[in-house]
Image (cartoon, rainbow, N blue to C red; front, top):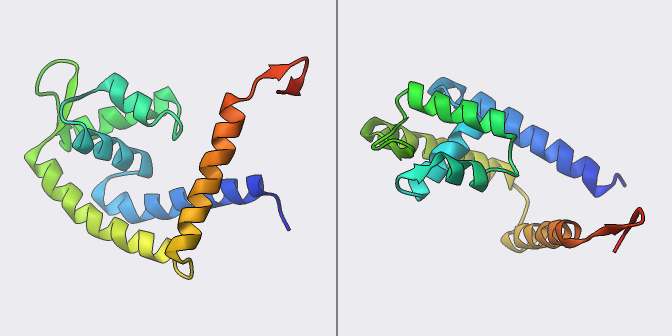
Length: 142
């Protein structure tokens, strides 16, 4: 059996590759779609809020570029300096994208029960918490 790190990396790569291909016709990538979701969920979000919410998903330069893309492509705008909001067209297009994303989620969880999915997420949350809160002393985890 391959270790969990192998499957985490392979799954993330598969998710990103499939989503990027699926979102290409909308002019989006997985990261740009995630940026749009943060903007949708946080009315008049700041760039810092978007960067913070997605820090685990990509580096700052990738996220900053994605913010620039959704602005230049008309998905989002700046209602006031330093704030981000979806445009009316962005809202409509994001609703169209949601239909595809729902189909993607169904495909990616084929054969996985809701209990199995919840268990997998809970285990990964615990593992992340364990490692993020551990300290290294003298080259050893504590």
